Image (tube, rainbow, N blue to C red; front, side):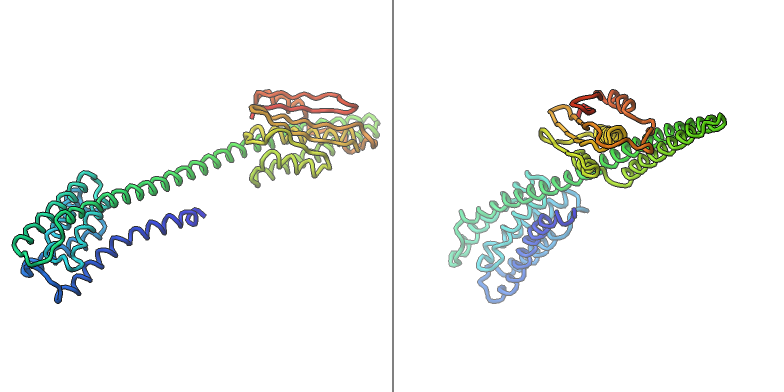
Length: 383
């Protein structure tokens, strides 16, 4: 995915990198083809200059990472000066392109802007001086105006601009990759913290549940020895209910370990949908910390479980309200419409008292009590 997102930038970068090689190879090849029939001034001097300029031009295409800065400047200076002198001698051929391409290459290749501008300016001066000298020595040759040869320095500005744009793109890519790695690291750290919290939750659930089961079984054993079989059977059923609640809580915690945590609104929506309860959101939903999310979900689960135990058949609703600094969960159930089931009596031992303690640790509050012929639980935590 990351490679696909960078594809347009990489294609543009490769396209730009092909411009310099295309110009150099075109200048060398076309000049070589034109050379035998073209009007060349002072061929014994022009031919070695053409060979030296071609060698310097081709050398400028090689990777420069292993060349020291002074050697880069030397190669580019030779490229520019040889091309500038060759320009008036073979101005009727593609050789006139060499100093222009050399000025652009200096802006792209050289890390020092001052060196690039100095080389381009020196090349313009040499090209204009050589053009004037050739015009004076061979007035019969048609030469470019001296002022026009000064323009060979202008492409250095395009080269510097291209280098700046390329560096900006590279820096932006590096910054984006660094930010992505930081986000992934933060996500892994948050996942580890969340898994540690869930592991502690499993420990608490199992500890309270097993203690409750042991107490109920001891009570059932004592009641049976006293001949109170009915009460002993009720204690056994209560121990079973505690075990069932413990299994459910442990499954939820293990599921959270295996799955990525959903945002708080989505998690509560699924919880309400599973319990056939109404769900509403007030305010603008925003990011909520993992501790707040976990505590909200646990409180909602506990409140819905209590409603099913103590008010079976009652309508239930969940309301999640967002403010600038806090998030508030309200769980309400109406009066019971069905008889209570004996197998749902008891609990896991991790009830609203534990939720109240957890809320206090996070700087929030939890209130639970009768309201509107039913029961309401309100949990407010900082975001």
